[in-house]
Length: 348
Image 1 (tube, one colour):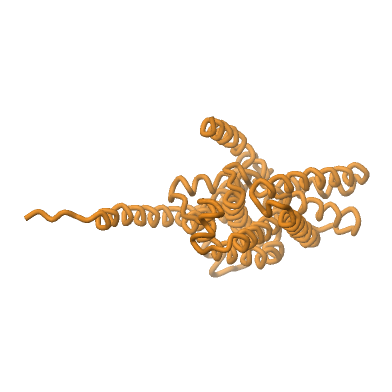
Image 2: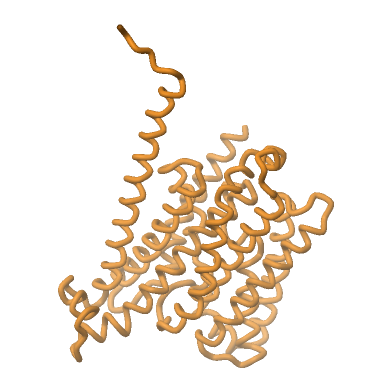
């Protein structure tokens, strides 16, 4: 006697396969991140063996390897981990909130807010250290994000994707003009700002990572809380409300998370391109559109990509270094052109 499977039973098999694939992809992404972390600690103008890195971490002595690992490479690796996670997760949030596949952490003017805060710290308050003006960068980013969300929420359409994008673009242009005005009248500010704006992990000590870590953790916690709501928002506001989600609250939580993550990352490492744009696309291609999985995989791939770019920057022109922001931009330019072309094809 032949048993015929019901539709519900037939649907279980693809679901299990999808879950299995997602688990494998997440494990592979975690392994890739571990390799990137190890490479960041071991490679540079003075390459170290894996056992030397391990000894420097677990049984430090007064040797050269311990000094290189613990004082030079460990702080920038920790910062690369935090910044990579923040930019990638913020990219997922921005693309979900604006329903724009080309959205990235600059879209709400947050990067420009951080830039303005840094320039203001140098030019007006005389702050001369990165650890000092990180706080101004974070404050500028948060102020820009709050302003955009407040103005958008007060419009007739509310904080809709188009409204957020338009207000963010206007604020980005205004703050950029203010930054250039300050730089044009103060040579010292320009010299300090030039080091920060290139974007990278060079010259950052462990204190910088410690300063931004609370903001990154708070942003990640909010992102986890709104993940299910983001899935509903992708179906439209009316459908999301019908499914029992509070659309305004989801947007507010997602926007706050994106602002915290972007502000912390940009203030600490400068405006690093590509990570927040490309990693969410790669994660969705690997695990699908479920934002819980997309956020998890992006949080693993983002720092892996940033740390890999940082390692490449150390190796291409020894004993000098090419900032990670330049490496990611060189990779991101052709990808952005591809994404724009693909978007035109889809909408045609």
